[in-house]
Amino acid sequence: MGGGPLSVLGPDQIVTLTEILVVLMGIAIAWAVYHGSDRAELPGDAKVPPPEEIDDATPDTRGRTLS
Image (cartoon, rainbow, N blue to C red; front, side, top):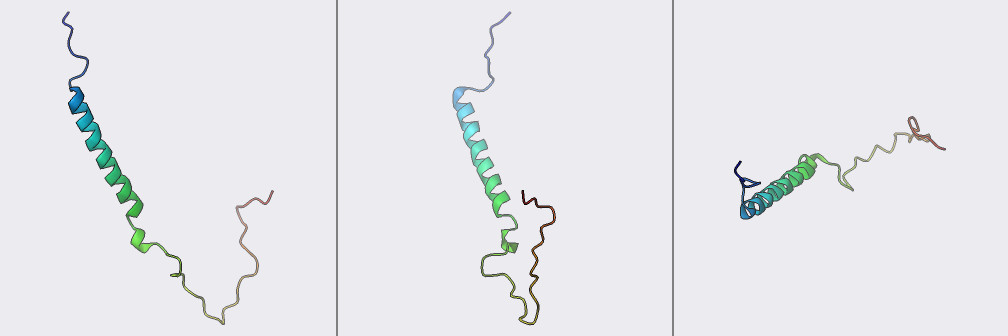
């Protein structure tokens, strides 16, 4: 029964692999956040309804609880 190493990778390799994975996760998270953001409605970009259109005075409360 030989006493082999517990890990195939050395400490420096583990640190390097962890750094690479963290950088890739950061890139993936940034892509997920900004993907499709060019189609987002920004403040001030909302369409103004025509003045002859009557506003709906009753808010839509379906699916909401008031208690």
